[in-house]
Image 1 (spheres, rainbow, N blue to C red):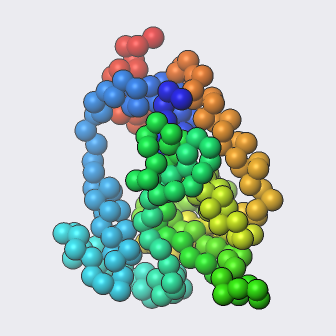
Image 2: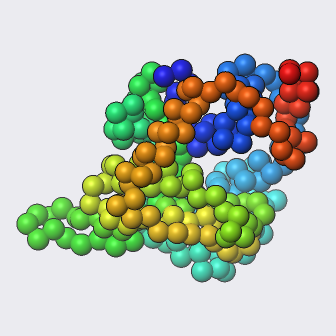
Amino acid sequence: MKFNPYSFSKIDTHESCPRKFKYNYIDKLPREDTDKTALYKGTCIHSMLESYPNKSENKLVSKYQYIFDNFMKSKYFSLLKLPRKVEESISLSNLLETSTSSKTSKSSKLFKGYIDYYTVIESSKNSESSETSETKMLIVDWKTGKYKLPEYQDYTQLIYYSMYMFLKYKKVKRIKIMYVYVEHNKDNSMIIKRENLQNIIKSFLAKINKVENSKFEKNKTRLCDWCPYQEYCSSDD
């Protein structure tokens, strides 16, 4: 493959505009400077969520502590009290084999990502062994921006992460994926069933194939006004 490893953002960039993909991932053109306040804020809040019950060492904690304090009063705070794994680096090989990102060579790595949070929400003991049979799972992506109404929520990123989990944990039958908007104490969620797995894989591979065979044409939309590659695009016809 020419452009692996893929990530959700990489695939999504091509879906929104193939030319933008070219500028970003192939030409690696410098982007116009943008306000990074939202990035720093999101990084800090993620750090507080991941560090709990310990204190985050992020330098901006004092500035955004009020957001975390408000979150602690919400029903979602209970998620931090469950046995969980946070900020896990994941990787799929070209053969759809699962591993941590560090254990897969770049040439054979098809997909990579970072899962903010996941936990088993139901389990039962296998009667023939001491092994725990995991049947349900919850995957969470923490959002620190503006809340999206359910009809505008794009679930693709967490659908890809559920694909990874189904491939890794054969006994998981259902996964609830959830975008939690930390500042608003709201979420958008849906259930993914194991029987959906093959269709997810098919769609996932089709999008990658589309990128591999792309001609990187422009996709002109009203979002072009906010694209960091405007100056290149306007002179590249």
